[in-house]
Every structure is written in C-alpha cells, then in structure tokens.
Length: 344
Image (cartoon, rainbow, N blue to C red; front, side, top):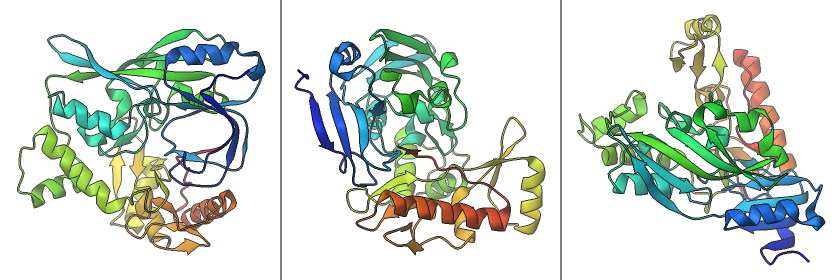
C-alpha cells in the first residue's frame, strides 16, 4: 500500500510554470526528509524512474512521466550560526527562493539581493547554480544536505563537493537531476558580514541612477533588481513561462572580438578564464525573434530571452520554437545557444 502523500496518475499541468499538459504515474509530495527514506525502501517503487521536482520553473515536460515524481515541499528557514566574518543561514528545499531571499534581507543578512525574484525553490537553486546580475548562488553556498534515494541515507555536500560552474554543478553534470539519485533537502548559505553591493551590470546601475541612488542599501539593490525583472518577465500565473529560456553563451575571446567588430552594440562580459559571456537575449532579438510567435508559443515582447505559452501549447510546440531560435542565432552569429530548462 502506498503512503497517503503519494498520488497516482497525478496531473502535472499546474506543477510547472510553463503549464504544459502531462501526468505522473506517481507523485510524492515530500514535507519531511524522513519520507524520502521511506520512498527508497518501498517495494512498490523499487526500480522505477524518478525525478525530483522543485518549483517547476526550469522544466519542460515532453509528455507523461512513467515513474515517480518527487515534489519537494519541505518547509523551514533559520539562522544556523554565525562567526565574526559571516552569518550561516539555512533553508529547506521546499522554501520559495524569492521569499527566502527577501526574508534574509529583512533579518539584516544581505548578500543574496541580486538573485531576487528568480522563480523556483531553494532546493533547486544549487543544481542549476542560479545566477543574475553578477552573482551566482554557488558563490554563497557553504554546504547542502541531500538524501540518497538508492539507500535512503542523508549526505552532506560541501560547496567544493558541488563543483559549481556557470549554470552548472556536480548534480547537473552527473545527471542526478534527471535520474533522481539525490534529493536536496536543505541548503546553508554563508553570507559575509563585510557586505559590498554588486552593481556592475549596466541595467542595475541604470535603475539605481533613475532613483538617484549612489550608495544602495541591500534592500534598495534588491528593489532595483525586482523592478528590472518585473519589466522583463511576465507573471507565470498570467502568461505561462519558464523564465530565461536560453543560457548566456560562453565563447572564445577571439570570436567575441570578431562579433563585436561586426556588431559594435553587442553586450559582452569577459570571464576570469579568458572566455567571454554574451547576452543570449540580445542575440535572439537581433535574429528577429523578440515578440515573435510560432504557433501557440513565442519569445516575449519585453524580453527576447523568455519563451512564453500563449495558451494551449504542447511540448512539440516548445521544441519547434527552441530549434527555430537556435538555428536563427547560429546562422547569423555562429553561436550555439543551449536551453536552460530540463526537457523531461
């Protein structure tokens, strides 16, 4: 007999922000870490395909899921400790990311403000190593806790263990986000007390300047980021979307220089390893896809990086638009774009 927190043939249409139709053979809503150990031991679930579902903002469902979908809804956040250099703030996997960031700021523990209004959950943040406006979550993660869904045992991963990189982590590289090998249950952040605002991105600096702010507080910086994102990103409850749909591509310095020579307005951001990050949204807009639809899906008119579901879209529509945009950017700039969401 299955536990009462598991549904069968569960509708997943409302479980992702892109709102594509799909069902899960089994859907477990996890509110306590102990339930994960129960799943690992349950004979009726042994050997079944698994997927760990966070906030559903980084997922494209390509059809019904023939296995166990594990929806992480564990609540809880707290100050786990502090030392003269930093606060250590812990949050459970089911916490809403934006709410958590705003809570840390309200407590007087700054550091995460540049990541305000990113959709999703705390538990999903390390997998993709979410980032925005000059900050990545992995820079401030001290450690995380996860359950091995093969054994049911809890394991601690240090930040070094996670091997964070641009929109990447050990969890993603090993495919654990697809196989359901581990479920992240809690993340602890190290927030330095010697806070300095990160205002290097032009959009952030411009938004602060519009408000006449020269030396922003953490809350002012957070509000600037929120204002920028609200202008660019539609509310998924009104217009279904999965946020930024393509990664900003990393290219060689030589290619970046050649593109900049041909396109002087090209935004580019040199990286410590010598590569250059380009703005995917700019590339997509220049390739003619900003505000353009293909069937019931399109690239948002306020931000070319955002793929939206105009209503009634299915997976094949999203995949067709993804191919069309990638081909257009490759043909014009010689740059390959990679989607950010997981296609499941």
